[in-house]
Length: 180
Ligand SMILES: Cc1cc2nc3c(=O)[nH]c(=O)nc-3n(C[C@H](O)[C@H](O)[C@H](O)COP(=O)(O)O)c2cc1C
Image (tube, rainbow, N blue to C red; front, side, top):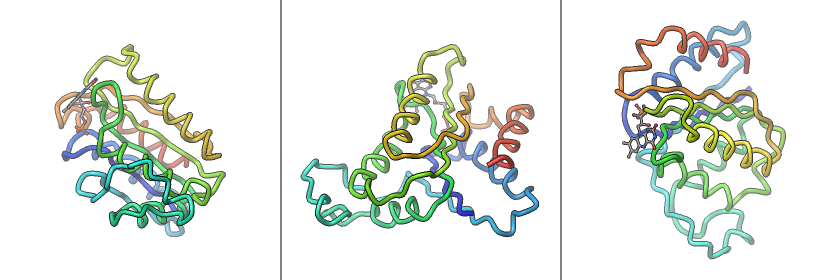
């Protein structure tokens, strides 16, 4: 099984902590030796924003030279995809959105039937509508691409070390990883 984890945060904070807990859960599985985990940090990737030129329609890749072809290859190869992102202005981070927009250049070839997990982390309390808005966005993306939601986890954490001190949530994340 190939698990691809997207990290939408530019800093070493809560999102990375959540990802490490999920990875720990995956690594605790009896079949862990057969599981390959790849993490892509959206920050630092060279992604030209989609220009809607539609040149990709005939090439199945972006006409502009950037990192999107290799990212889309990793998506194509994955059986499970985890999107982990902080909330920025009631949405996913711009870094992650750049990556997702480029799915457009290979949408019909990415492959159906993948399992998707999402982790959305904001400073606001969990009753803020931002969590539902973003989780719904992931559900729509998965639905469009023929993928199935495996889990949707929303977390309230603000300072970069907040989640690291929340043992209950870390245990939940480990269980989600183990259950993928
Ligand atoms: C530019 C920016 C915008 C943000 N917008 C929101 C927001 O709309 N809602 C929210 O709850 N938190 C918002 N936050 C707080 C982050 O989501 C929160 O600190 C989160 O834990 C960051 O995750 P990280 O530690 O993985 O980077 C924002 C933070 C930044 C830097």
